[in-house]
Image (cartoon, rainbow, N blue to C red; front, side):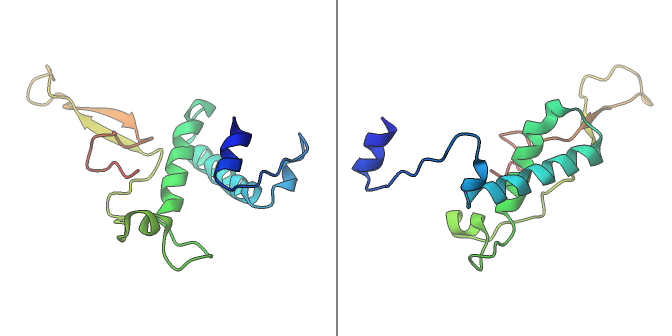
Length: 129
């Protein structure tokens, strides 16, 4: 199926020997960079490995908003044809507070719940992917 799709679109497939990822000269350095950043973010936030997917999403999002060597613009600009705004970026793994409209503790009671920031809600102003 993949072979037919490649042939139909004029692409040449190159297979590598299993277990020798170092043969892939383009993707492997990028994967290493991504994983290095993810490990650093998770260590800094002191969170469990279950947050690795969120850390990876945020890492890719950030890297899409910064310039790369091969072109003079960011990947975001190449895709959307406009400069990205960085004003909404928030430190990953930081403590945040979410308003709790159903508080029942009187005037001086807590009106927010403490949470750990890992990703922007999909339908919020801060969502950037």
